[in-house]
Length: 271
Figure 1 (spheres, rainbow, N blue to C red):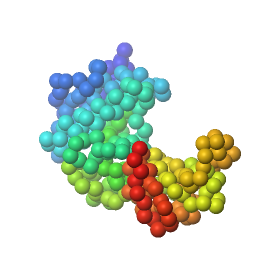
Figure 2 (cartoon, rainbow, N blue to C red):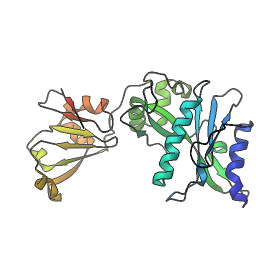
Figure 3 (spheres, rainbow, N blue to C red):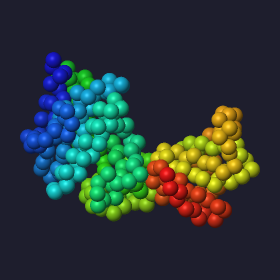
Figure 4 (cartoon, rainbow, N blue to C red):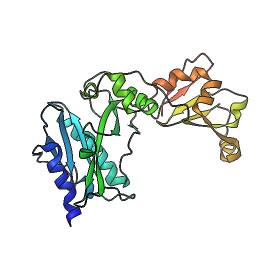
């Protein structure tokens, strides 16, 4: 029973300031509390997300740093993640941005959410039982533009903070991109057919984590044979077809580029 109280107690005590409870739940029994630590940004936290069952058994509460007047944006991000936890029984991965094809906040460029360590360290990030054992975590959600998410995926969170100037530069949801997109890391997979041995890519799709490439000559029957499919690293794919870089550096998840030559010019195909 003591462990059952560890999560609400942790949320209540976090940052050494009393919580302000928001009246409306964001789903089921999940509530939102607001913290205003002196000298720091406003911190929104969930209370009750740790009760959602997950396939891994992990228990987490969520948090978002925000600025005055933008608490609603933080609540929307926490609701998105809570809905995913409830539907897919998974917790958000640390250090791997979730990228959406369109902004999830109207009037902003924010289309990605990334979990990173907080600025307060383990005292905030780890939930402990009475005997000191770690029994869960508070996951800090960062709201990013697609370019920022692309940069962070390729270079890491600390590099993004350094490039942006500070973590506080990544708080205002109305901001423009703080960095240019970095495309895909060299070890990202590219799924393609063996016809690429003799023919260049014609259609290239960015899924958010990898690429799928087709020459336009493959038939359904050809692709049904696993022997006709290969996986390359993006670095190998880029070395052979460097003109795809323009698309990859700018693409949003789900977009497909049509290439008609090796100039690098492309058009986006409709879904």
